[in-house]
Amino acid sequence: MNRVVITGIGIYSCLGKDLETVKESLFQGRSGIVLDAGRKAFGYRSGLTGWVDRPELKGLLDRRSRLMMPEQAEYAYMSTREALALAKMDPDYLEANEVGLLFGNDSSAKPVVEATDIIREKKDTMLVGSGSVFQTMNSTVNMNLATIFRLKGVNFSISAACASGSHAIGVGYSFIRSGMQDAVICGGAQEINLYAMGNFDAIAAFSVRENDPTRASRPFDRDRDGLVPSGGAATVILESLESAQRRGAPILGEVLGYGFSSNGAHISNPSVEGPTRSLQMALRDAGLSPKDIGYINAHATSTPAGDASEAKAIHSVFGECHTPVSSTKGMTGHECWMAGASEIVYSMLMMQHGFLAPNINFENPDDDSAKLNIVTNAINKNFNIFLSNSFGFGGTNSSLIVRKWE
Amino acid sequence: MEIKEIIQKTNAFLADEFEVSPESITPEADLKATLELDSLDYIDLVVAIENNFGFKVKPEDFQGIVTFQDFYNYVIERVKQKELV
Image 1 (cartoon, each protein chain N blue to C red):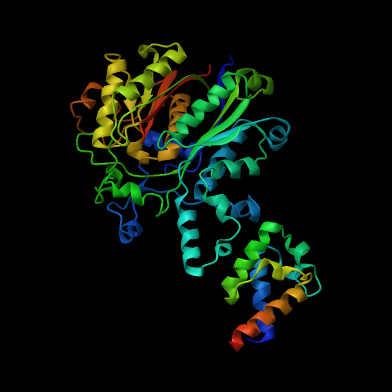
Image 2: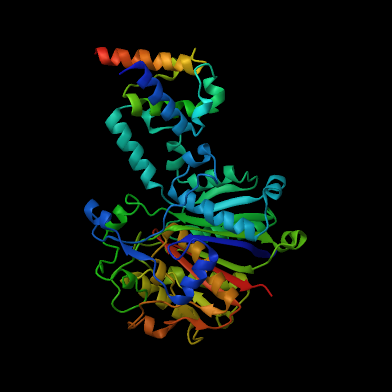
């Protein structure tokens, strides 16, 4: 079995468009949430959203490449550029080696809506243009990045709702551990546009605290009233230890464990039992006990039921370990398909720089969150191992454990 | 629409859509080579024509078009047909 290390990370999110800016935002407890008037006009129950501008890619990519990319692929291109540079993987290396690509993505709404509108109006499919088909498919991030970076290894997308990004890293870890790949670029990407979240808003999942956008996402807080959608992209480059050492690549961390489970129950109602099994499996896989974990980055999205279930699951496994817990979604909102990857990046930044980012807006616990050690302000603290949870509709659960490389 | 205006409009959208310098577009230049058109680009050419002149093009209409002058002639003819309707 190969040991699996992290040699590159990259981020493009509502907390910043590069690692340095995001690190500062995490430490400062800065929120990336805004009220988007366009959503209200469009018919959303809640106009709250995380916000990140689309990157200007003219000058970075040729016209043909740009035509194929929906916004989440653009974000993923930016985060992957940053991660590849950090990992010292240049075009020559990518050309000569079978580097894989596993990205989490579970929608591409805007290109689908826009193409359908054109066909309805013009009664001619050709008028959607040549880029549309490549933008609309769920694998759009993979097909774009694999083409742009000329990747030659494993290449497919992971769709697992809000656990997509986490499972992408877990599956990449499995490929490398088994020896089937030496290096895999993993990540998650999430569109933010007006069309992306209307049906999610429809089921009253979103916070309506519109008069106070930066305080709307309040994971584990007694007065939480729903999640705030958000997006962007995050990239985590995994590599076998042997490959990283052979290349002289910077080693940032080691993935020690991956746990997963399916609730086998309701499509949207959370469970305690499913996430508990995922947590336990990750610990078993890593050969660790709960007391070894220095920080838990919770999935907690600020929904009443979801946060309560996760608090119960964490407490059932970690008991009286008093492990520090925070959900960075208080700042970012719920980055959905991207969240499992971005939260590895956020936790890596904390671990590298010796601090715990706060679970902002946690003011009063409820009966379940009162049993957890929730971090309310940034704390300067060194830790060596963290665990990150991600759960999604359909009852899919993923937990990852990462250790600092020293 | 005057022929001069049609040509100016055509040159402008071709340079913009395919990101080439306006100076590279001359009547005798090769359309495919200058715009670096591949099979997918012809779809975008159909879209650009529809957006700019409001008529639909069949991909087979491009057969026989080699130079920009050939392309102008085709567009001019279609615009004139449209104006007659």
